[in-house]
Amino acid sequence: MSYKIILEQYAKAVLEKEVEGFMAIYDPIVNVYDTWNSWIKKDIEEIRSMATEWFKSLGEEKVRVEFTEVNVLECESQTVWIGEVKFYGINQEDQILRSISNRWIWVIQNNDGIFKVIHEHSSLPIDTETFTGIVKTQ
Image (cartoon, rainbow, N blue to C red; front, side):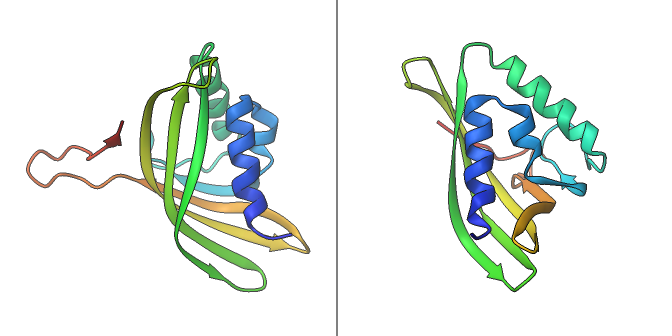
């Protein structure tokens, strides 16, 4: 098994809107620097609340997640995954309605074959003239 199980679990949990599956990838003492609405999330229950609200807000729609690796730094006990995460809003017929991409870094801890995210950082570049996020959408 490798850190890739985290990517698979995340994508599956988001697609199925399964909060417990989503939460299963995170270590209880995770730090999340989130692009959306808050500077940092350090409380696992805050992350659970965010996921619950996100999945409920989707209604009948679902979200398909794709990962594009830019760089992976691996050692015995930790992996740093750096890449782009693309979120596709899809309808019940699996048609893409919209998409958005984030730059993403995960620090994944390996404790005897159990992989957990201990740090997550998502970001968007900021336009220096308007001080607004530059969002890649479809």
